[in-house]
Length: 116
Image 1 (cartoon, helix red, strand yellow):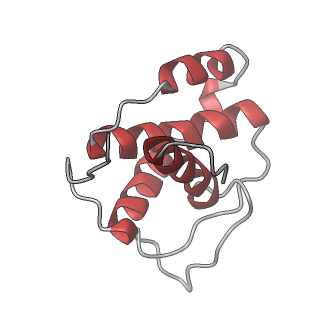
Image 2 (image 1 turned 180 degrees about the horizontal axis):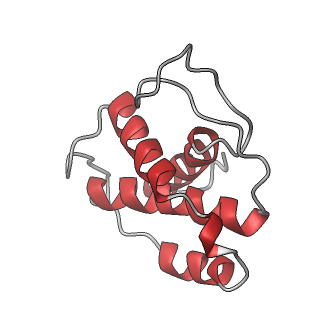
């Protein structure tokens, strides 16, 4: 991670990159037969760049918004949405990835504090 980023920017960047992992953009993770949110995730490396970026940035936006951090996600998403096949975007994976990250990081709505 770029050490010149402000804490809020690092938070959003980390959420985005974790979104890639938990949406399966880097490969799958076996769930040992579990089909709930505690299990793994499928290999979704087949998605195009724009679809992957939309999913990961959507995860970052959800987590950041709930933590009280304002992002520039709309601008970033717009550039990818113009080129993406939106029918390939999986909202369920976005929501599950967001919930998983919040649970792992023990983030509760509006609880993140950042120095100004």
